[in-house]
Length: 111
Length: 112
Image (cartoon, rainbow over all chains, first blue to last red):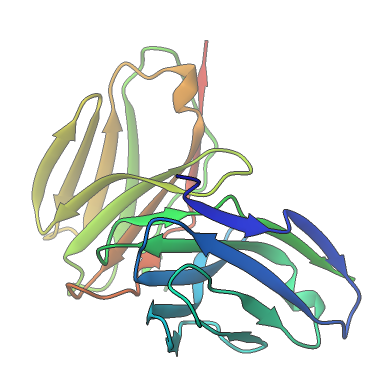
């Protein structure tokens, strides 16, 4: 099993550009999550999904959108990128509600 | 006041030392507690999970919860250079929730 995979690993965006961060898991987990991790700020939940077709906002959803058309994929869309979205983004999935498996992260810089 | 407080470190210890990592929290409703380990430029991985108060041991790792003091700890015995990482605590009030509050992480360096 590859676990949770994320692409790209790194990306530099200009202000106002858009992009999609890809996340795929091969563990047949129903639950999937997107977090951002800023220095000194811990992990903040952006969006989560409890199954295909079901998504909900987390703590910091503004500026982001998600979709969940399949169990495996949970892409995160950034529209009109802003410098405040410079961060490391982690996707995670879980079978139960507590043991989350994280991907390797995407480092995004918006300039 | 943050809901979860964690000293960012770095904490440097010699190999073989006992390490104590701690988090304090303000929400008395928290009853599900986790410790994650995160190596540099990697995603976090779950180390320990505890419910309510008490101790839980797994090999060289012991997780301790003191709900009366709103304080949780992770002890690492016989620390190794491979334990060098950032340790994040996370906690929640509700079973089955997907919304855990994470601490900011403590960076640990174990010196050979």
